[in-house]
Structures are given as structure tokens and as C-alpha cells.
Amino acid sequence: MKQKNKLNSFENIMTILYFALYLVIGMSLLIKQPFGNPPDEYNRYLIPLYIAENGTLPNGYDASIRIGGYGFSYGFQPILPYMFQGYAMMFVKLFTNSDAALLYAARSVNLFFGLCMAWVVLLLSKKWFHDPRFGWCFAFLVMFLPQSIFVHTYVNTDSCCLLSIAIMLYGLTLGTEHSFAFPSCMILSIGIILCALSYYNAYGYILSCILLFTAFFLSVSHGHIHFNTGAFLQKGCLISALVLSGIGWWFIRSAILYDGDFLGLYARNQCAALYAIPEYHPDTRITWQNQNYSLWEMITNSDFCTLSLMSFIGVYGPMTITTSIWVYRFYKGLFLLGLVFCILIPLSKTSEVRGLYYERKKFGLFFHINMLFCILMPLFLSIIYSYATDYQPQGRYLLPALIPLCYYTLHGMEKAWNLPTITFAHKERFLTWLSVLFCLVIAGMLMLTVFGYAFPYYEANPIAP
Image (cartoon, rainbow, N blue to C red; front, top):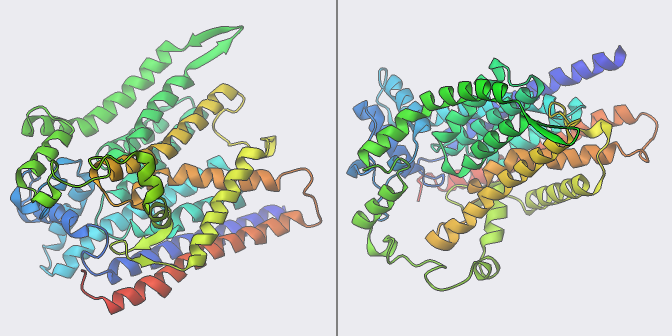
């Protein structure tokens, strides 16, 4: 009973610290960052501004939202987060036309997305970890990686994307626990809708949801494969109907506007071909590919790996505000050590993921294959962007991999802690204090980045370059 009360007290304290830290740091960054200083915020802001001023969605070709020099706009891609931001700005305009108030309204939508994500990640941690102390470490690592909280504080679609991934994973986990009952189908559908209407880079998760949902209804008995067709069709049709009703309008609209191009990708390239200056024109733009370098040469002879890794951990502003070298060393060591433990230490009953039906080991293995795919897909896309389109390597392109990466890191730590050779007096009490220390270190690394590096930069550079 005493142990249970202690854990309850631990939970209450950590809950207050968790949400308070998110709100304090998130709101501070939201207010302190000069307009346009975060990556490409100015060009992204054009879309919610258009919605707020006109009350309608823009055509991707509209001159008022095109990106100078590059000739295309973000209006061709799914813009659900920008719609929420535009409507929030319309509401604020009922009371004031202050440019600062309108900007904060748009940014606040993403801050709210991040708050929702923090809640879902916390729910997910309770499902994925037997011990709540490791669950809290997981939640802190996901939410307070410096780059993670950064994307919730300015105008972008990455924030909604990360929320959608958390919701999809939570819906999958509930579905495997409760045979995809209606609530889990609803949650999974909401996650897929938010993902489909926010960020193409995360579509690998939608594919994984489809594959894992299908695999759940497969079973092997006496050497024969069985498929529960009735339940699959019943639950699958429900999810499909919910998702299609949520996303169909956007892709139908795109097909009508862009001559059948329902994804808008070809139309975006055509727009760039029409309006881009020679330096950024798709046919004349200098890339690694059209200079006849190989992918390997780009990776080994450029700063691709360094920039990608550093900005995945935390580089603020227009890829100019780095943090302490010790922050980068800490996270590199943490991820490396956790992943090594996760791979090398055998799974035990005390370190299994709850809710994923590990008694069906083949399904569990398939789940991990899918999560590996979801980790590698953003990296693959980032490499292609840098190679074929000359996009600057940025860690935010890799952030869709964040949740499974943090899970495997903490899962490795949990497996190491539960090794039978590690026994000593007061082990449980020590774990409680160790988990608190871990979370405080994560919080400290974030505060060092924000207050020690980002804010001094903003004060010295009040106007975005």
C-alpha cells in the first residue's frame, strides 16, 4: 500500500511538472521568436493569412501565397493545420487587427496541437511501459527534445503531423487490446485524417496502420492460416468510411483544381516551372543529382549527416541557433546506448510492451518491422529531398520518427534495468529517484537550449533575417 501511495504521489508530481514545463517553455518560445525567424515561417504564414482575410481556401497558383524566387506555394499540399490557424486569426480579428495578435493566434494553434500530443503521449506511455517511471522518462524524452517542442511554437504543419502520429499509435495499441472496438477505430481514424491532411512525409504511418490492422485479423492454427474476414470488413469499413469522409473533400478539390492531380505534387512542380527564377527553377536548379554525384558522395562529402542529426536534436531559428555541445553529446549518447541495449538484451516478461499481444509473437515482430519502417522512411525522404531537390537537410523532416525512436531507446533502458544480474537493496526507490533525475536532466537540457542560446540570439536579432 505504501509503495502504491508513493507511486501515486510520483505520478501527481510528474504530471504537474510535465504540463507546466510544456506550457511555460512553449508559450515563451511562441512569444519570443521574431516573425519569420523559424524555418520558412513567413511563406507558411501566407496561407492562414489568406484564409483569415478572404474566408476561403486559396488555389495553390494564387500569386499572394507564392514563395518568392521558388515560384510555388504551400497551397498545393494538405493545409488542415493552416485552416485551423486561419480560423483562429479570423476570430481574433473580431477584437483586434494587431499583427502580433494575429501571429500569436496562428502559432497558438500549434501550441494546442502540442499540448494534445503531450496528453496522448502520456496515455501511450501507460500502455507501452509496465513501469510508470520508464513511461514518464519516455514522455519527457518525446516532448522535450529541444527540436520537438520547437515545432509546436511557430506556423507549420509538422506540429499537427506529430500529434497525428501519437494518435495513430495510441489507436493501434487500443485496437490490439480491445479487438478494434468502436472507440479505438474512432481514435485511429482521427489520427489518419490529421496525418493525411497535414504532412506527406508521415504517410508511412498510414500504410503501417493499414498493414497492422490487416495483420491483426490473421492467425495461425495447426499450421493453417486463418483470416477473420467478417470482423476485418466490419471494422475496416467503419474506419474507411470515417477516414474518407474526413479527407475525401480535400483530394476531390485538388483533383478539380489541378486537372486530376489529387495530390497536387505535379501541379506544384508546374507552378514552380512557370514562376521560379532561374536559380530555383526545377530545370536549372543545381542539385547533387544533376551534377552527377552519387547518393553516397552527397552523404559522405557534405554536412548532410551532421546537420540532420544536430537539427533533429535541436537547432532553432533559420537553422542558425545551435545549443551547447553537451546537449548534442548527451542525446547522441542516450539514443545510442538505449538502442544498443534494446537490440542486444533479450526480451523478458517484465519488459514486454503491453497492449500489443506479445503472445502472438509473429504479430509483435510485424509491429516492430513496421515501426522500423516508420523510422527509416522520413530519413529516406530527407535524403531524396537533399539529393534530387537540394533541400537543406533539416531535423524536422526526421521528426516523424521521434515516437518509435524514443520508445526503443527507453525500452532498451528498461530491459537493461530488469536484467536478473542487477539486484541491490532499495532498487525500487533508487529507480524512482533515477527516473526523476532523468526527467530533470531532459528539462534542464531544454531550458539550457531555450534560455541560454535561443533567447540571447532573439534579443540580439529582433528582426528576422
